[in-house]
Amino acid sequence: IPRERIRNFCIIAHVDHGKTTLSDRLLQITGTVVESKLQNQMLDSMDLERERGITIKAHPVTMTYFYPKDKQYYQLNLIDTPGHVDFSYEVSRSLSACEGALLVIDATQGIQAQTVSNVFLAEKHNLVLIPVINKIDLPTANPELVKKQLEEILAIPADTAILASGKEGIGIDEILQAIIRHIPPPQAFPDQILRALIFDSVYDPFKGVILYVRMFSGKIKKGEKILLLSTKKSYEVKEVGIFNPKMVPEEELYEGNSGYVIANIKDPSEIKIGDTITWETGGTTSPLPGFQEIVPMVFSGIYPLNSSEFEKLKNAIQKLQINDPAITISQESSVALGSGFRCGFLGLLHMEIVQERLRREYGVDILTTYPSVVYKVYLRSGEILEVDNPSKLPDPSTIEHIAEPLVKAYLIVPSENIGELMQLISEKRGSCETTETLDQNMVILHCLFPLNEILVDFNDKLKSITHGYGSMDYKPAGYRISDLVKLDILVNGEPIEALSCIVHASKAESRGRAIIQKLKERIPRHLFKIALQAAIGSKIIAREDIGAIGKNVTAKCYGGDITRKRKLLEKQKEGKKRMKTFGKVDIPQEAFLEILKTD
Ligand code: GTP
Figure 1 (tube, rainbow, N blue to C red):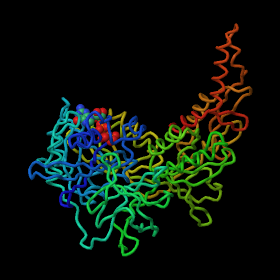
Figure 2 (figure 1 turned 30 degrees about the vertical axis):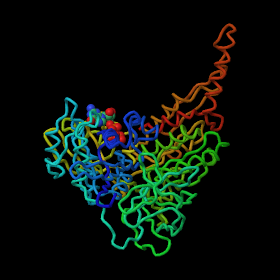
Figure 3 (figure 1 turned 180 degrees about the horizontal axis):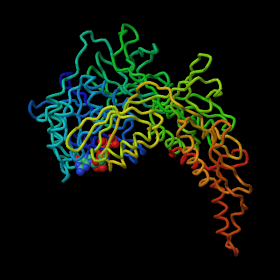
């Protein structure tokens, strides 16, 4: 299929507006997968994704479509994009591989915060947008309102919008034809030099690193020597092909194609997403645009619960990082926790997903420390430190002041919830800069928040106040000096490093109380009394005790039911396995998880 009949596009939408369902329909109608095989949501391949209903990785798929108007076959390359704020960098890199995008909007929900920010991103990449008003099968669908929003908020002509239902299969042919009519074919570079953009990669234990590429010019085939521009490393190509939706080897990939390249790349850390592939000799020296340095926003320590499992954890984290280059890792060690890793994540959801994958897919029992943002610490000596780990905070007497990262947040919310939201915003030390009305029901708030405050549960609270109708997106907005202190949690006088956090002075006491309350609920009684304390420096600000009891769990079973006794003992053993011992006190793994959610 010649370049003129290739289209590269992606689907952008707010979370849950129906991207995946619609993608599945496109695959089905183009015969890329037969319906029986359409294992509910083909493109979301990770279990965890399916469970949480969020798309994490961008999966490209090549479809062939017969366009009845000119009776020709077209190659349509679809690149899936995630919809959650944490993953907007993945949206961005998918966009750089496309010429156009379907903008999917749920007809019952209308335009949401991520719809707007995704449209801004797409416009930055000069993509042609095709608005799709989805879920019109629902009785509460209001396509007319969405059309009005399209014109008023996004300045997109409403008559270009296609009414569709991914679920019922309405409007699918119309969408495919609009892609062919409105999205331009890939541009060609006249010099025919190999230029391919790496927009993602996965690791396969047998084949090594598999690069997902978008061909911008020239050809690539097996046996060729290629060069990666940013690392200046060269490799021999072993296989090239397309996703259909499984990997299908091809003779060659040529300009306009999206597909994969396997070269003898064994070490995934040699790959930079956004890098350009060219010839080893005679190639280009100027990289394709599209490279964006990934900046982790949230850091947490990850340690094996059982220190003998360090190697297993190391292995698992390295493997995970291969398929998720947005995680940054460095080895660290702590007196209480032994050896582990300091990991950087895009946001809290990203962090939770990584931790869950380590537990589930790799079977490592881990203990994670309280998440932290990156603080700038100005020392009296004039030195400035970046601190992403509360335990690394220098002695307070040496600190001049501490600055915390801010974000500009963009909230679209129902006007009737404004009162409650303003209260939430001020609780989170935020400020609302401007308010705009969107239509008779919705308003847009532009706010400034300390990142630290919206990390843990802001999104959940926003959803609950607005009954699911509110949404938000945010981007970094510099630093501000703030009255911050380090809060320590002590168990029998010993500080538990994993629970230390940096908080605003006004919140230290309530946070301290909440954490020790959670600990009190989760730590089982021991043979001795346990004192739980929250402290700032040497000042104790909260305290709870756990009384002592006997530990014989079988004592309660009178009579001699031996199986019951054995079961209890096994249960106790099981429970023990998931504990970490600090001094003489066993703290269950789930206590740490619970505390992460404490605000
Ligand atoms: P993320 O990957 O989380 O961003 O979600 P998504 O945008 O891919 O949405 P997905 O396709 O997973 O659909 C979200 C929910 O909406 C699911 O429960 C779907 O069954 C439902 N849904 C999707 N399309 C339609 C539609 O056309 N009509 C109706 N009634 N429901 C739909």
